[in-house]
Image (cartoon, rainbow, N blue to C red; front, side, top):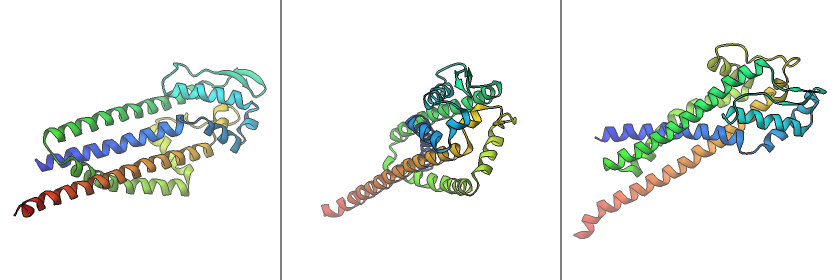
Length: 240
């Protein structure tokens, strides 16, 4: 039965890490739109597009609403490049529809991970497992297993973000329509590679913070469980 406890604990732990990852993405992307203003200023996006910050942010809000499924079509008429026109072209719309599928898929995985965590806790409680020992210890093992991969990915991104960026697109897209021509596509002028690098770093910091907080809570719960076990073992001796 104890083996089953540990299996459930590992499922819980990997589900927690997955939930933290996708939540970190959502927080980084949607919690503060002032980030986009700072990025546009940093990379001089407005000069590249010949548009105002208000118009750029209007396009950004509409685009981000589309990605999370809050609007059905990606068509935003605004003043750009000296004339009033749709900011997005057909290639933009096709690629962003694929990006939306990825984003919504990630949110679905997060929801499934949260359900999995709840089910795992219920099962452990029904089996009268030592939850305060099983879950923290399982999380430490899962974090060690995932941590190496995360460290490698982080180092690769720091050394050559472009290579990681290209690798990501080859992994998740089965076409080359994610390759844009700045002379023809406004979207790539608004979203330069440097912006993606900064956003990836932002996600990484938030994700790391979530992992560390979970680690601290796990260590605290594990120590509490050990203290309780030692106290229980001492009680018979004290009775004598």
